[in-house]
Image 1 (cartoon, rainbow, N blue to C red):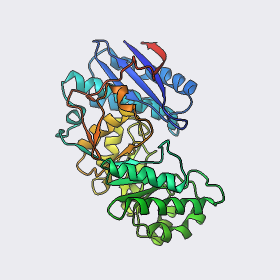
Image 2: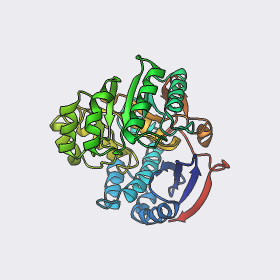
Image 3: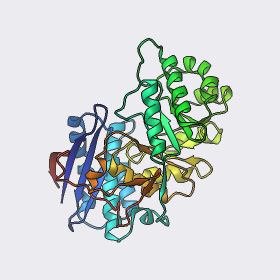
Image 4: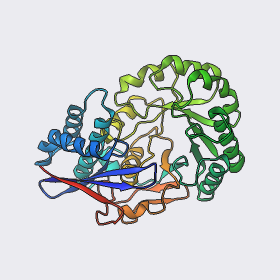
Length: 363
């Protein structure tokens, strides 16, 4: 039994971390724990978390056993650790589904087979963040078949503009470029204090924004109420949440329209599924600014959910990302075609020169 950790620098902003687990019977599974911190921290956490999961790898295990082990391996308030748990849990689910000869979506209880609708998150594109550059990236995404795009307009400064001015200029340029027939989402990343954001909400809404994401934490009921009272825009959030109880007040009070579980940050596929199933009346749009392994896992989760609407895809970062999985990430016309094989249906090409093998953990 062993585990391998791989690092893959993609852009100056993005580094992907992948794990490969090999169970006692030789079955292999893959997971992704990107956005868990610096490499040395991720390496230490993988080694520590594996100690909590090692007992599973020696025998047979089912979804309940995986979910229980993953919950025990997490620690309250430690997002980095939970993200690493999420990557390793994905690999365990991949192994379990492969053993049964089922695509992960069917192992999760779904029908499978359908293509997954995507929206283009263009914020991580290497093209740049000036309003016109963002608009050009959005236009390319639409030309590639995406009918929805998302930007994070307040993330970076523009010389000569305040943060609010820069944000509004980006949204305006993007809407003008893509036209009225394309859905436009705005992710605030909590970059603008609510007191400064509130006066901007009517202007943001005037661009026919489909949803406003992470303007305040999804657990901040006062902040969510302020946004709700100031604008008719739908409100999205929940990417860092692991427990349904954290979101229940916001959903119950109709302050959160779109719930965004993340298979990494929630602590794995099963934890993200539990969040989604807890809010059957809400729209589910999984958070996924990720590499090809977490995207495959999230795509299968999406296909198993009755109330999922559209899946995030990190558009325009690098043109070689599908090479990491032997070209088996199939994105066309704004849709992800799930690979038909068992488990994730994709395997990490561990010989790819863009991957750096960090360490082998022997269990």
